[in-house]
Amino acid sequence: MRAADSVSGARAGKTGTASKNGAAARPAQDDCPRLPSPDTLTALSALPHNERVRCFMARLVQKAPQTLLLEGGTVMERAAFSLYWACLLNCENRGPTPCFACDSCRRFLEERHHDFFLFDGREQSIKIGDLRAVRATLGEPPRHARTRVVLLLEAQSMGNDAANSQLKILEEPRPGTCFILTAPQRERLLPTLVSRSWILTLAWPQPGSQETDSDIENWKEALQNFLRTGKGLFSHTSIKGALDKNTVARLVANLQRQLAQAIIGGIATEHIFSELDLHALRRLDETLNHCLESLEASVNPALCLEWLATRLHTGFQDRKGG
Image (cartoon, rainbow, N blue to C red; front, side):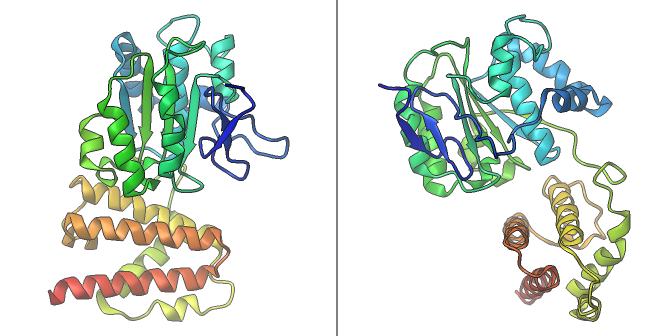
């Protein structure tokens, strides 16, 4: 088998390839790195609210589970601690924290380790063909690392076929291989996938953090009022220049954090999301993701918010009518 042979999918993005020997393909010169830099990893892991995660991983590495599921945090934090765990499993210094400087750590950080498979669900859905393409390789011992790492970033992007394929892989013992799955909340994955994973919950994003929402409070209030009454929002969105892509994206991100709290029962009873059952909350999550996808496709931000508000209002009214 030649290292030049490639399959699509293990490296997400426009180039979308990884060699069959497991090496994550290097980004092209005009690509941006898809994983956090060592400086970012060091900074994020040093934050006080992440101390529990660091300490837990330092203990867990002594007897690493086959599958680790990281939920909570932000997309960046989940990606960062996935890479942190991959480096910790294989760091040549074998300390309680990865050094990010040895040859093994550097190869993982640069996505050029022959025992590193990366499926990036942040940019496109993870397909069943992507998983099947590397399944045979997973039956072999790692080539260079102590532990082969298969990372599925934002695994909620898997369709049912891909999720079931991944489940079959997890049902077979894979000595020397560790799977890492990330998702905003475990409820967004197949329950059978979750049941086969060791779950580590990162600190949930809090108001007042870097992702603060102080300048979108008026939009949040207008949206919540529209969900209850069906009135008032469009008079704001129709004002020229009132909305831009960044504002709507942060508003949706705020709603996603509130949704996460609602799913785990950590939201105030007077909040409108508290009126929804788990099935409705999952449908809400799909709607929010679709809105973000529309923004990325350069749909007018005001139209995106109006569509989102209309869908949510209809859903709330249908539930009350039922």
